[in-house]
Image 1: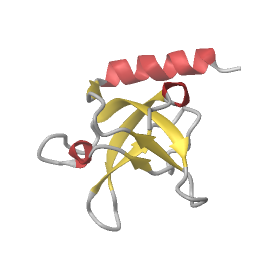
Image 2: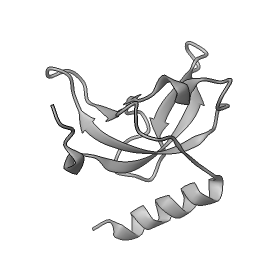
Image 3: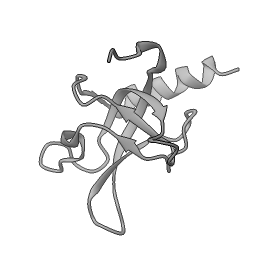
Image 4: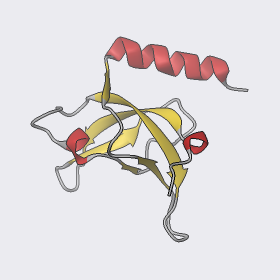
Length: 102
């Protein structure tokens, strides 16, 4: 099945330490259309503390989906290139998002 490119949009995400399990989790950054509590399914390499420490930011091409009527989550294809964001680039991306909102 072909990938529907129209369903994907750029989303700034960050890695955070899960207080319950101690593992790194990926979540959307605040200030976008998606709540920071929304789960993100993406490449496992982004949550690898040996590669990227907690607090790392990335720009993903993701879509909002659910699996067979279950809870919603953001899905980013694992084969897309990893685009790390600096703090300044993340701030600039979020500012552009806010200006573009209706």
